[in-house]
Image (tube, rainbow, N blue to C red):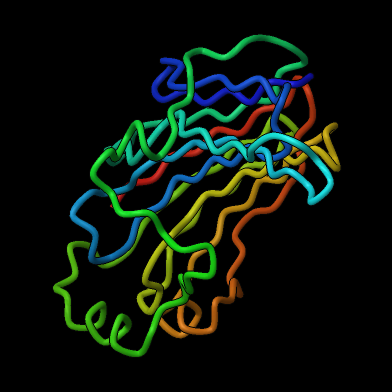
Length: 201
């Protein structure tokens, strides 16, 4: 089974074998009001069907790792390999956290958006660059009205031969509508492919 590898400045942060999982996600993102410039999260999960025995799995390999301006992140898909370390459960990482109900609504309320609007901005925009092993090179920045920038990579067991990678920015209205309307980059990578991503303020 393929492996998803994430490095920062040539140091491997996490390598996850997709064996035993049906979903692996990588997200690097930040917003105008976050204290941290950007953070990196890497998770892997397996959700059992109604007729399957056992328990669903949700493992956290990287949780809110701060990325500094100018640091380079490399996302690669490898043909095979092993986990760099053991992923942890939510209970292991956050033993005092309350259990979230299965029907909990994570969408932002009007009050949530109001609080975000009122928070002071720590940066006006993000400048970014992406280089793909396919030859694509993109340099750009977010528009003044954009609130956040996110790089997302998703591998799933229904299309195990590739990983979907996208870079997008969102406004407050996009957050309220749970929409993504401003895509800067989208590509599917296969074994042997990689993406280099860098952002600065």
